[in-house]
Amino acid sequence: MKCLYVYNPTSGRQNNSKNKEYILSELAKKFEVVDCKPTQKAGDAGIFAREACGVYDVFVVSGGDGTMNEVINAIANVENRPKIGYIPTGTTNDLAHSLRIPKNIKKAVKIILDGHYVSHDIFRANDRYGIYVCCFGVFTKSSYATSQKEKKKFGRIAYFKYGIKEMFASKAFPVKLEYEGKVIESDIALGIIANSRYVAGYKINNLARCDDGFVNVILFKNRKKKVSFFSFLRIFRLFLFGLKSLRNNKKTIILKLDKFSITLQDDIVVNLDGENGGTGKFDFEVLKQHVDIFVKG
Image 1 (cartoon, one colour):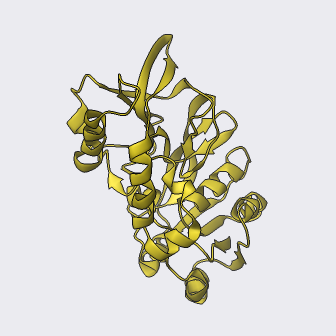
Image 2 (tube, rainbow, N blue to C red; image 1 turned 45 degrees about the vertical axis):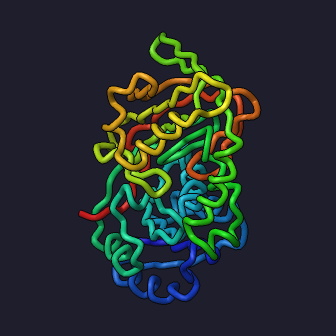
């Protein structure tokens, strides 16, 4: 079996270059061929992943959620996709938390060597792909607006710094959700489309399944132009106590869907797996069990 290891030297606060030799030596215990490529710029991980299709059996990537998003977008519509081994070295690592992949390098590598994997859903938003979250509204710009330098220096605290600034200037905006012949129109403070247990480092839905073909759609209604104090309370409630705490809340829309569309005004930017996902109208579709990722058995 052939394996390609790709790492992001600037991801998170760990030194991926320093751990390279250990990771390669461990992978060599399982795979007959182990090649290695470092990323030099944004987009490289995706290029390497696409080139690996049909050539390598396993593609191991060391980086954060943004690096994984590159990989998923590169291989989503390609045949002969390799199985993915994930060594999380980013700032929040939401996908890794949801899949119970530890940040400890040795433990993460052992999961790949043990060989147990899950066929993970992904979702398509127009011509882009995501694997764990799509969100829009208050707080959602921080993951891609915060500089890599600040992330490396302060870790997750860097996000809070940006988020507090955004909090005091946030405004509600209209959203139109269309699904199964139904239409919902409302002003909201925040929208979350989640395919994971964790978002922004917090466990929001312990019952989420990564392979059931559905995502959770969560919309926080807000009647006033400015995001209200009570909307913030409901948002904090989600992140502190999880989705179950909002099940009977009339001002929060919670749905489980596999195909739908969302229309946003042009100045609202969608956050797709922590990256800038664009603006406007988005047609969403879940691609069930589309990629294989090594997880703890």
